[in-house]
Length: 440
Image 1 (cartoon, rainbow, N blue to C red):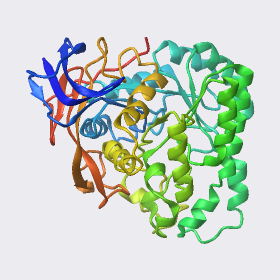
Image 2 (image 1 turned 60 degrees about the horizontal axis):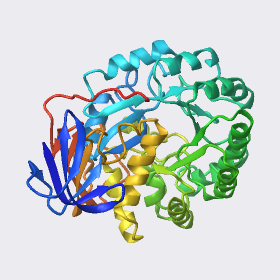
Image 3 (image 1 turned 90 degrees about the vertical axis):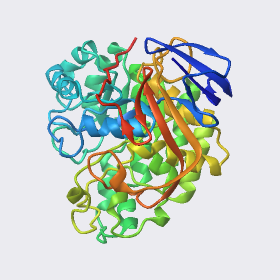
């Protein structure tokens, strides 16, 4: 089979080409023309890779599930996702729990998938066996995750676990906020329906101090570290110094930090609650600059949905509402909308949303680019189309999102996973054929 376009996004630029596909892989990139599917002037992108998704199945499947999440991914041009070890019950902190997750996913996924393991307070003896069972890396929290079933780790527990993580050769993903600054900042706050109160309760220092701790431990144990969902630019100088030192630390940010601004969030608008929080407009612009400068390596959604009653719990009280944003299907149009305003190229977006996430998960031997030998994971993207977000038309389980009503630029027309069309303008493949991914 051949798929062609006058604008194929290749590692060395955008040009007319046809993609020859055999047995689910890209066999060859040839001259444009004569293909089975011609995308015309629409972009053909490498399928996006989202390394930060909370699917929640098994155990909290009423929040989200593999069937619904992977349909949302396919509709958004995402061809591979990596599931976080929480908020499912049981959490992916032992091999037995990983097997339960594998069983739940089998036969339900419209895109390819992998699993992160968890590092919690009491599972040091399971770290090596999780690596042997095929997790792509580990995730930990330095602050309470807001949910039972996955414990945070303190410094002593981290120091006990990190030699095992380092020996595995896998990366530790870190929710980098420390509880001390949060507890101190929250002590005298009382107007909790106000977004400014919630923002003040999760100060920049919580992120900065957590990242300084992880830089120190990365240096000490020579363990690769990845900082998830960076929101505060105040941490960038320390991260820049760590990179200059040659420490193996990578960083991600998320669409909501690159699109929204604290000044625009109304009181009681708990759909916008996440942790770390959405910060000021000036902070947002510096995040974009950090991406351009290479100080932030990738964009991941941190898709963290829940039932509507949890998101609206407390009648607009930011203490009570669940903190998490649902955006899996919308990530590419969100970033494209913002990127066009800043004259950011489509190649850069593919680097941040496909190539670099594939490297983070150790899947660059199969995913992340349109190149001969890699999986034929492709998305046909109309960059000139526009859509007004109607949450009821989104594929994730519950039709709520803070993007509802927004006009976004760019529409995913088709998505292919290993050469098979899994999404076509609102229609899905009759059967899910997504497969689990493992490292090379």
